[in-house]
Image (tube, rainbow, N blue to C red; front, side, top):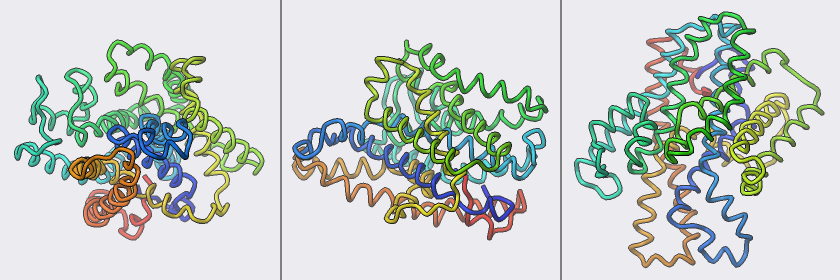
Length: 385
């Protein structure tokens, strides 16, 4: 969620953008659904409960899809720049990550701090053992997930930063590990072990529900899965169309099972269902890369735009969710008509993300990279990480 150095790399991958769009949409639907569940609206008379629940309650799983995509894109772009992960330029790598992450993060933390100090409902940190200074340190120090695991949930706009903590801690250590190992026969088994550890690391934390969901190792296992995908694509830059389509169908089936048959998977596999999720995401990513040039079904441009704005929407969507719910309640809160509020809420989430991307993240990223990395500004317009 970085600019690239050749024509092929500079083209955004449509399939990956669609997958990111679906993931961020599920996250937003989840946070709306926790407050206005679709299964409690009049839509239950028209659509099956399983469909409405799938739309509302797969936000956590969607974040793990993001982890896989992030690992794939960042490792893939590093491979294209350096030819090998053992040749990563540490300074440039960290400069790119800071340029992409920091501007929006700093702005969000500043806005949330002002809202807390103003005593704004939904934004005040008032749980015992928590404080604004400590939340700021946790957010900027990439351990907000740990902080919540130890003290409880923070207000929603702070809470979304748990996944960023996992992602950025991984990328702080990842290039150093690559430079220290130097050989793929050392690095790859480490990544495989980490990727396959997901069910066990997730299950081992069952004593603390918040920490189980937000601990470092399960999320890093999903990111490692994406890194392995980038190494696979480097090794096999193309496969037959049949293999690519088979991977796509396998990934789609896996995603369907997780979203619609989650209870069945849990009964049969317990925490192993998370491995089905990351494997399915990887299959879809690989299929997207190996079927580049295939024209997607028309009418999905809106979902691609959600994918392109996924980072900005992720950081800002709770402002819209809280505002929508408060207006909904002020106007009577008829839950049977709650589904009608989803359309304006989704539109406003996209619009806010678009405005932040246009006026904050992209200009700031261009400015920072031009000074620290020397990346031409024209190339930054197509950044894919």
